[in-house]
Length: 416
Image (tube, rainbow, N blue to C red; front, side, top):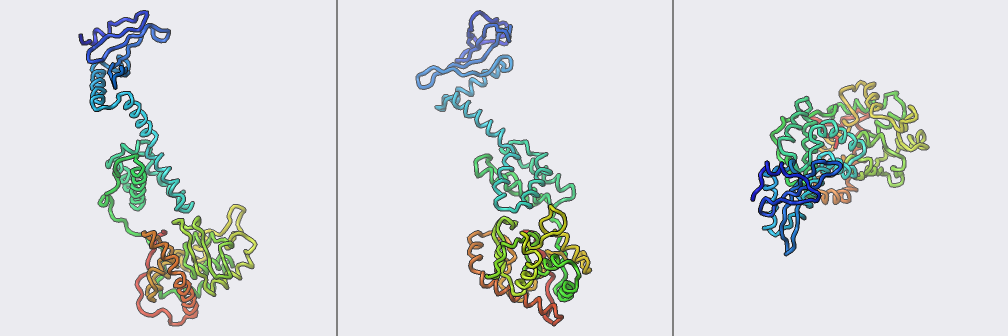
């Protein structure tokens, strides 16, 4: 006879455990009184046979699991049995799955992804990326299991960042979230990427370019650099930046063990490059001359541009270069990064191969095979181009009419 809630409530504990059947293998087991439970406990159980052997599956305690809920659980377990599955093993597997889900929160997976990315990014950019995620993303979806995050959750995060007036940051956040989901889906931690297609979610942000003078003003800048009475280390840094057009952080962090005077080359290790890829810089005769003079000042130190300020500073800062340009009258008109824009614009105008220029700028090549090929193929071309560039700057510094024609505006390059 099927059980009722009233009949279950009236079941009293006895000296020994006993079971009362509800039908279909479902029964409720009444335990004896105990020190902890004076009324005794009531546990739902379902008896079934699998491969000719009798099995017993626990379905929870009454009244936390009601009579109706116990019958639903029985029917669910019976369905598994009819499919040839073991209800007991499936339950254990489900518990494991739930544990995996609870451990694989968006924040946990993101930190694993960041650990992998740290091998490709320089330390500064890696730290900045993590700070952005901790500030904008983790407070909103960090605690959610990554498999349960839906498109509206991602939209809410991205739009919240954008509403603060930081559209560029919002786009970075959207891209980062998408990359985390790609990482997770490849490892079977989620089934789809909710940030995969959000092209129309954000307005187009106005690009912010690094300040850079037009090519026609380059001769005056070079004259100003020669005439500037700043400290020798900082002025050497500016001159080398003009000759090599590397990124500012790559320049100021340069170490003497990266310079090969015999081969006239500067090899920047991947640890100091933003995209974690070693970079080769051919050194012109002019660059070698500056380095030899600089060596008499800082050759005993680790860094080329050793800082004299304080014990913690190992090398000069980006601010030192900006302040020097400011003293020359170029505040808001020229930055260290501006030398990269100038070099790209002028070298392209002088018909050097765009691929050679891009490799020397250390821009990311989406095709990794092509990128590896270019590193070897363009070595001689880059050496010639860098010497031609140095000779060009020498002529420009004399005030000769070396910049002819109407140049396009200097190409602004992002900090790739």
